[in-house]
Length: 133
Image (tube, rainbow, N blue to C red):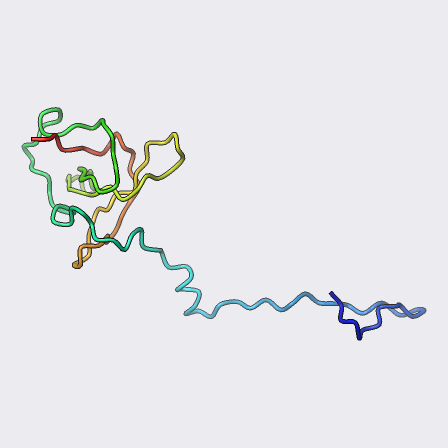
């Protein structure tokens, strides 16, 4: 908008005044790094913090000790295949993706205080669920 004190009536042979948009303020380098930093998935302590990031026993057998189908809920302990080929314990944090997708955010490491260290999104069928004893 143009302030009322500015006459916008063009004079003969004179271009009307140019009104510039408000100046944009960009964050400083420190502010930008704060704004772009990854947000923690959860500040809550993990329910199975003692299990997360520990190895699953090598002698566990599918359908005897664990299964890959069944309901998942936040807080469930799950088996996750890691990039180094090992299988470790993780904990389901939340449902991810679209409603029809079987994607879950899983805590794969923990901080010393028992909160989520790092997480990743996994397909539900790839997560082993321990069988009840």
